Length: 490
Image (cartoon, rainbow, N blue to C red; front, side):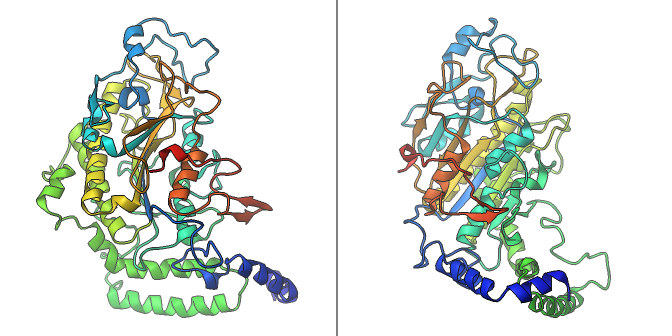
């Protein structure tokens, strides 16, 4: 007998009964789970009536410049070229305290709200009256890896579940044939931290993000047998799965206190169902011509220039946005779309230290075209009413220049925005100061905890009550922080 089995059989009696009673009272037993989610209340309901069922997170990896895209600062035009002065000691990531730098692109008003947008994100003008902008976001660090983890997991160090994992854990799947949480990475490479950004950490492994690459020859790794291996056909694959199922069940039955194998079995069973559902969900060939045109996918060239360009970025981002809509309508609960890979040269990310116009330009135009199309498409299909679209990045960029044409990191202030699913449309919340360096109200900025708390609230979940005990601590997505931003609720 192994030590773990001895401890379970000798101590799993009264202690196990007590634990089962406590878990049952809170509706946390596996038998109480529906669709992989939790019974958040004893009556099986959510904490309160939800406005949304699903979430799309658009993440701009590298640090998108709020002052060049969404947060218009006329004072930067007046101050352009003058020595920058912030009235306090400022520590930058590199040497980013050069002269003031005006917005790279001109701004003009859009929609009934008259929201000022940069011309490089002009496609968002078509949906600007649906968007709630948050201009006083603050981070804790100017380091990419930590800033990215903070936005994706609520902690700036690894070892904590992604927001998508928390949503999957709390609410479960909407479909038996597709994962609850799907990740669509940039096809050129992963962002800082790689897969840690969608890891389940101490939550069940079924809650981690499933990586899908739309447009690739093999969109989902290891889903089908390798066609190059003659004996790995459908019949052989099915026979192998049957044998594995018998062995796995026998192993799990002998270890009732260890649920890791059960989670792995569920993953394999889901993968088998995905073999039928996923290819259809990712096949855009039957989309109407007007929908493909909306996303910029009506003419896809066979190759692209080596240099970063707007056409390629439009197609790369638009394809994933369309795939996201198709996944959402087939029951995926949380979709994460990434723009930008980690520190490659030439840059295909938002970390524009050298040249904002060169790097941000194609990325921003492609993002705006795809995001605008996604919002319009969700409205067309009726999904926007109960789907939240969240746009964010790890931090903003300084209003001062770096090397003449670039901008350094600015964790002291940046912009995020939300739309749909109970979000108040056409508003701008939490103004930044006259140069976009920090929030005007420095005592009451918006933190990622507030954003996460608000999203969970719209999903019908009290962020303080969705907890898991790990290493003696009751952990939650919002740590010990977070307030619902009531001004953003419709």
